[in-house]
Length: 144
Ligand code: RB5
Image (cartoon, rainbow, N blue to C red):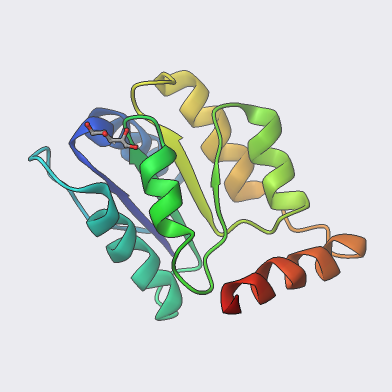
């Protein structure tokens, strides 16, 4: 199960991504917004809350640049949010960082690029091995 959300600036790309998720047959919970003005930290909190509660395994967050919503998500314990604007970073943030939240900028990328990013993010498994200890170190930084 996935959680997805956007602010107003990411809303139209979120609609495109939802169409794509429907085509893929993915199950998701849409945490808003519905096009109205929304503050990206509130949407990040809703989507990441589904993950920390164990209701969803991964999340997708979209704001205008993808930056504010990824900064917000990364403040929440247990979240590893990655801002991806291309296929390569989406692939490697799953392989090496075990990212559980994908962030994108609705004013930065188009629907075609977003679809490629979402597809590889959802289908790529964490490589583990030497990367596992590094991810553990990331998680320890939560307590600093
Ligand atoms: C909203 O205007 C915009 O600031 C927001 O979507 C995002 O880009 C912030 O990082």
